[in-house]
Amino acid sequence: MLYSELAAVYESLEADSERLKKAETLALLFRNADDTTLPKVVLLAQGKVFPPWAEEEIGISALLMVKILSMATGFSSEEIGRLYKELGDFGLVAERLCDKKRQRTLFSVPLTVDKVFENLRKLASVEGKGSQETKFRIVSELISSAGKGEARYIVRTVLGDLRIGVAEGVVRDAIVAAFLAEGRPPKDCKAETEAVEWAWYLHPDFGEVALIAKKRGVSGLKKVKLELGKPYHVLLADKSPSLEDALATFENASLEYKYDGARIVIHKKGQKIWLFTRRLEDVTMQFPELKDYALKAITPCDCVIEGELLGIDKKTGEPRPFQLLSQRIKRKYDIEKMAKEIPVQFNAFDIVYLDGKELFDVTLTERRILLEKAVKPLPRFRLAKMLVTKDLAKAHAFYKEALNAGQEGVMVKNLDAAYQPGRRVGFWLKVKPIMETLDLVISGALWGTGKRAGSLSSFVLACRSDLGFVDCGMMGTGIKEKAEEGLSFEQLTEMLTPHIIGESNGRVSVRPSLVVEVAYEEIQQSPTYSSGFALRFPRIVKIRPDKGVDEADDLPRMRSLFEAQHKRQSS
Image (cartoon, rainbow, N blue to C red; front, top):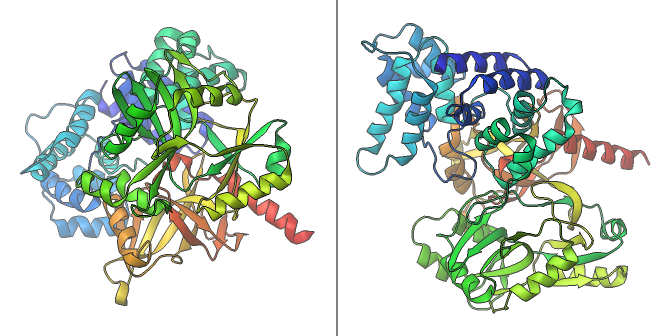
């Protein structure tokens, strides 16, 4: 398949704001792709060349893109910078320059999807001396060979900002329409949609899921199984307005500490251990001591156990805030030193696979019994603290106990419920003192002045919508001047700088990559922000590196909180 065909689809998707039409456009693309190309175009339609669980990253920033465009087109960095200020999009800059570029590649041949895909994948494996120059050449070659309309999307894919409004739900619907719907409208394809979702939750790569749908249909999708050593999407909890509401929701309920840590999934296959976060990241290397604890504590040969990993004080054994533990999650160097500085404790709360059998259809009561048999508790590897009760007084005492222990609150779980990977289905409810925080992404920022010069200072917050992320406020409160006081402006700047995709007049655009938990005074309707809402006095509670941007709160939740707030104010 020629890349120009994919670029034409991108252009159509970018111009169309209707979700259904986007899915139809993608479905046609998927049907026209052969078996080899299909997984690639499905990933590329999401602006990716690796599935979400892959560790590889392209690693090209907006600042490096200026140099690449200069190499590819012959225009100076200054000229490119001026054009970017005019257009505000490096993809459009590349397109404009390629139309009138001064350097042309002799005997260039049309780009194919395979060529673009493989070249972009190469970027992740380029390391060592001269790696930057090699990356420049790889991307420059593609841009130099790009035909009309192609350079825009090559550059955007490299920067991780495709801007065509294709979220995971659109890709799912497109797979259904392409291979399973048989001409029926989406509303009549519920079973097929659920089959695609099931396969995606257990095998988080829409490229491979699309191929299964094409070749094996609904029955093949339903047969997708959890694989040891590969991450899956975990069951997610809903928020409850109060402990009373949560307890009243279930006939048979248990309470567990809601630990202020990171959710970790442990896969064990004989003597082999893998550790994954809820974001599908492999962190086995980052936590070598947890691997050792797991081998000693987990008695079955093969199993998958979920739990919460806590950072603890190396002297007292008391829990430390999640922000401290988060320093270890992305760590690639000085791992042994960090393990000594920030020791960990694992609190197991569920088991979903045991000696060749998935336990998704087993009730939580039965899973807890199996978990207790599977784990031989150790000082640093134990079972999550749990209470089974419907007595509100006992529940409140347990809740206060969790808070006094430095934890976030409690989880209230339905003991009669099965396990549903990847979804919030109301089986688990979380109860915290501050109920109306929002998990949002940072989509932009302003460069600071005065004592904050050189650091980003005010941050644009955004929530999810069907067509991407929409802004809902500016935040500068809750962030410290010095790192020793807590999360600092300098630290946030370091986290966000690699994800800057554009800059103009002191304002930067940031590729959504970092989730932050935000408190606020109230939600107001506002024409200023693209969401239609604005947070009044937002302040950061903490960063959430354990959450992916696809887990950020969405526009319907923003709207429901606004409506609930309005009802309270009117009563």
